Amino acid sequence: MSQHDEQRRRLLGRLSRQLAYTAPLLALVAGGAALHAAPGADPGAAAFSALDEAPLLLASYHTEAEGEAEAEAEAEAEGEAEGGDGAAVARPEGYSPAYSETGDNPQEMLARGEALYYDTSLSSNGLACASCHGSDGQDMGYNPTFEQPFPHRVAMAANQFGMSEVHADEMVQICMVAPMAAQPLEWGGEALTSLAAYMVEVQKRFAGEPHDL
Ligand code: HEC
View 1: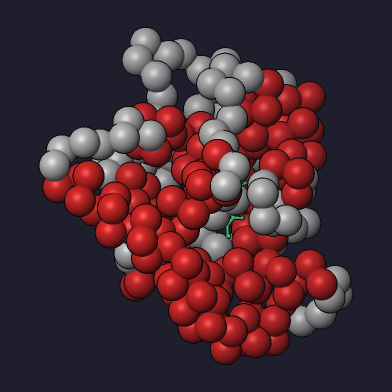
View 2: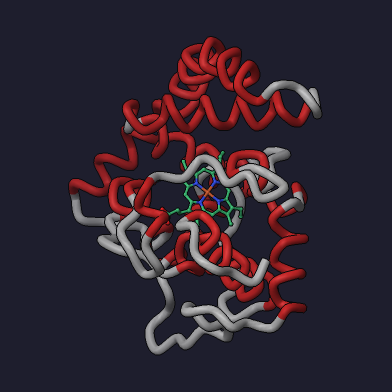
């Protein structure tokens, strides 16, 4: 098995261990796929059919990932944290980002971030950020926590990665490794910087505040 497959299976195992969280996530995944398959379809209806399929997806993922999940739980019990996900999605020590988390980022940076937001090649499962979070300014898939400026608490970050609050770039990394089933983006790289800057503006739009989009 390739290292990539292995990583993906481990992530699925991690997701499967938290059923309460996994069911809505898989509904989102399936909803994203359904929306992809039928552009112009009523998103509400797609979400409904996705909900029907979610338990099936959940069942198959769970079976596939069961072995890893158990092995991993043992490793964690022995205190052998793999230094993987938590470390990979949190800002490295002494890191200073190349975007501003209060806004006022250059328009080109925001435009690049927006392009990446629609880019399915960032993921290993055919999804783009927009598959789950909406397109054309119809922000979705966010909890009310998103009404506060970064850094703030996000349920997925706390539950899955033990992070009590996250910066915009850390949240992008979390969605890269969990729902997008991909590697984290390079810290300080153009992709992470511009996606995070874009999400800072999306946050303002979500909160009903003035923004640069
Ligand atoms: C399969 C669906 C899915 C995909 C694809 C996805 N996300 Fe998410 N995203 C979620 C879920 C689920 C949450 C967690 C919501 C929570 O816990 O409050 C989330 C949360 C977030 C948040 C935090 C909102 C807050 O409360 O601060 C941001 C920002 C975000 N995603 C950005 C992205 C970006 C950028 C991408 C693409 C790189 C992406 N997401 C891809 C499902 C997805």
